[in-house]
Every structure is written in structure tokens, then in C-alpha cells.
Length: 328
Image (cartoon, rainbow, N blue to C red):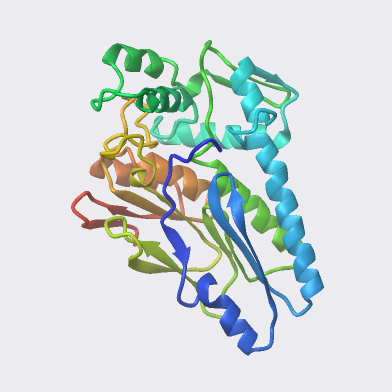
């Protein structure tokens, strides 16, 4: 996508992805690894398989799926389905994946009372344009201009039908930065499961674990410390679970870091409630979207919203570095 609103401070470590190759080579099992960028995120697909040629075939299938979905969701590709929707305000005969993901995004929007809203793209355009100008006011865009952009943000004005997607108002636009990486991670994971892979860790900007580490223990996922670059803030043990982290500090518009790509749909301002939010969920799509929503939720509200999503847990890092664990 054009740029990411989210800083994914998650890396697989310990008994997980980072040490997977060595452990499995010791057991004589070859490992195939692909590293690249998917939807603007550094990504890794790593498979242990006794047949190297079959492992290569499976990775190729994954990359085909990533490329196919990028043609649907990418904001930086002018020919993507999402880019055409934003340009024209309507998209006839939309791809099934776009309808499915927009429908899921709309459902999360309703369940979070609009804390997650895919129609915040006009805010991104406003802030990006403002801070790209020489001598930009460090206080941000003028209030009147911000108010006008905020009036274009409303998930309820996104019309989603199997054969047609459209905006109810001129000037509206969608970004799926807060949910698409999770969706792509889920689709790739499901593709591998359909091919008979039962114990896999997929990292495509969000992380999803199928089964367990080949040793039989859960996968260990390390959490990056939002206060100290390169430092690990802890680990999570996961199996048949997904993990996503949101933090605006990784994607600032301004040098001071006051304005980031995580927006509060209710005000049009940038989220400042938490330094970072990590969510565990049954699937990466939910984890991705919910970590975005909780980023703008006050402490008491965060617990209420999380309760609406069964099987989830969250770790919210306050500005002073202290952590609130919900359903830990």
C-alpha cells in the first residue's frame, strides 16, 4: 500500500520462526524461506518439508496468492480494485475478496462503534499532503480543513453488495491498511492448510500460527519494545492463533512524531491513547482490525470493545511504558 498506518513490532523468535531453520536442519529437514514485501510490510514465508521441490511449490503458491490479493487491495497500484473504487466512487462487479474484506471491515466497524473505520483514507490524504509541503505548520492541518476531511469519514456510507461497491458521498475513499495484511495472512495460511501443512508460522505483516512448532510446543512470538528499537519486550506462546500489533510511532507524518497514520475516526485526529497495542485472536484479520480499533480506545472502553470479540486478548502499552493486559 502507499504507506502503512501501522508499525508491526512483532517478530518470531526463540522456539518460533527465527530459530526454526537451525533446529530443523539439525533434524535433517530442509527449510525453504522467502523474504520480501507484501502490502507494504516486510514478510516471511518459511516452510520445513522433507521434499525441497514440494516446499518450493508451496511457497510459489503462497506468492501467487499474495500477488493476486495485492491486485485487489493495494493503494499504490493504480489498477487495483481498491484504487479504482477510490478513484471512481463506485466499482461494478467487484472481486469477491474485496466484497468479503469490506464486509468484514464494516462488521468490525459496527462492533467497535466506529473505532475501526476503513473510510479514513481522506484523513491520510490530508495529513500526508499537509506535512509534505515545505514549511508545513507543525501544529497540523487547519481546523476547518480537518473538519471537512472528517465529514468524509463514515463507514455507514459505504455501500457493499456482491455486484457493486459504492460510496454514498463524493470525496470518500477507503484504506484497508488496518485489516488487509491480516486478511492476506489468513488466506495464505488457509492455502497452506489446504495443501496439507498443519504446523506453520506465517508472517505477512501479521502473524498466524497453524498448529504447533514441529517440536510439539507452541510457537513463540517476540514482541518488539515500542520504547527501545531492537529490544524485545516479551514473548507470546501461540498455537492456532494470530497476533497483530498497532503503533503509530512507527509511521509518523512529522519529525516530532505527534501525527501518525493511526487516526481516530471520531475526531479526525491522530491516535495518542496508547504507545502500542497487541491483539491475539483466532484469525489474523480480526487481530489486525481489532488492534487498530483499540489504538483509539480509552482504557475503560478498550475492555468493553474486546469483550465483543470472543477468543481475543490484548496487551496495551501506555505512554509511560507500563502495560495493561486484558484476558492475559
